[in-house]
Length: 125
Image (cartoon, rainbow, N blue to C red; front, side, top):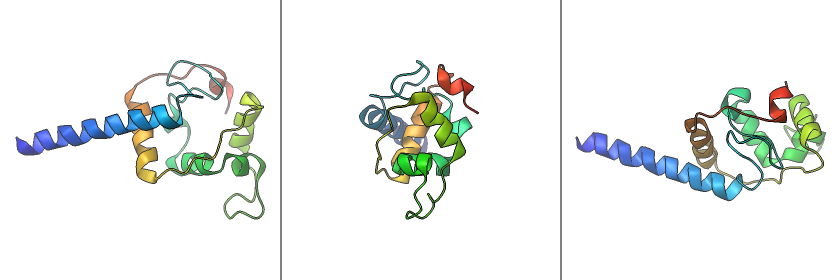
């Protein structure tokens, strides 16, 4: 019984952290199932992009969109990132330093909302 209670506390803490982190880092520009804001609706982001891609984009959006020959891993533009920017320009997402654990917490919170995306993001392939 104690183990079950501990797991419930830990999972609700992770949910609260994800919600708080989303509010702090994402909510001003993104919704979860509410359609476009400044940036795309993030509902379903877990199924559209792998964690490594999301982490890389969040860390250096400009490098993903335009490429950066001087930055390892960003030498060439990413085709999907370019399409994403074209749909939502002129605003470019700011770089966000975030730990893998915090990003995973945000992505879990987004997934747990069980919402479907709306807006221009549906047309980007």
